[in-house]
Image 1 (cartoon, rainbow, N blue to C red):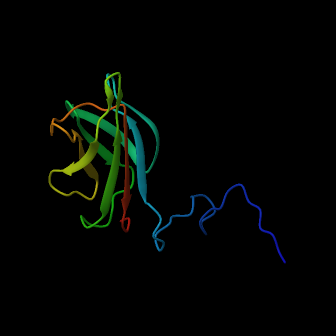
Image 2 (cartoon, rainbow, N blue to C red):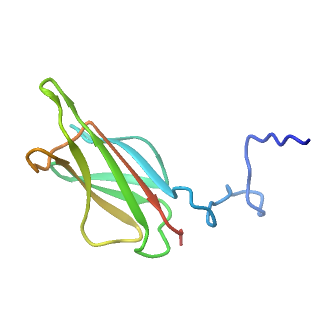
Amino acid sequence: MSTLKADTIVASDGTSPVTLTKQSAAKAWVNLNGTGTIAIRDSLNHSSATDSATGKYVFNFTNSFGNTSHVSSGLNNQVSPSGNYNRYASLNGALSASSLNCWSVRGDTAAIEDTQSLQVASHGDLA
């Protein structure tokens, strides 16, 4: 039996990282602190996030998807002194290969509110 150990796997050109283009792994994901001055905690294939309004965020991909048929899903969590509210991430706006619009929605009131923790993953073929 053989064991393969590697710290880095690069493409055949020897300089760039291997791109997951033929696999179903997420091609982009982000973990965002959406309160105050928003901040990306960690991400893959996201160049930036913009706070476009209360509870509304735009995520920009580093490498665009090949078309607008990529699929995204999100989780939203807000802990408050008065309890946890049922919240969800609503993906809104025109579909784009280079960015994603996401809203943080409170389930019991349907209010769009800033959130402490928003996570979104996107699947599809990169350009």
